[in-house]
Length: 113
Image (tube, rainbow, N blue to C red; front, side):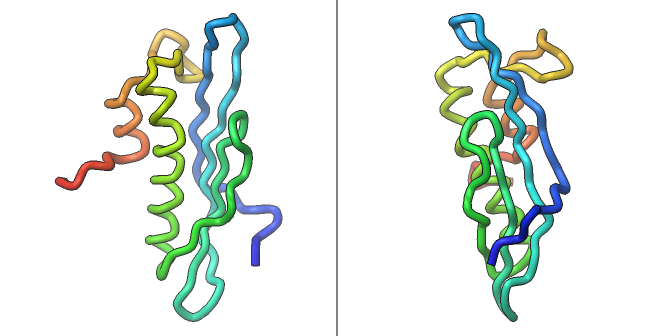
């Protein structure tokens, strides 16, 4: 089961300023988790501008599916940040993304809190 169209509840807009001068607008979207079965939830997630919509992310609770969807977005953006790709906020081209900004938005993937 997949909700169409998803109800997007959170998004982050990013601009990728590529070396060849082209610009790619990226929209990281997380949808409202929905119940699939008694003990199974799913959460829509997409990275428009790069990969589009992913398969919905499943978990045993709405919170787990939501957290896993957010973690997926971070894991897909991390390689761009680690290779010093020029990612900036759509609203502020002077603010370049780094691992600190990635973690501030999507949460740290570290084991300690």
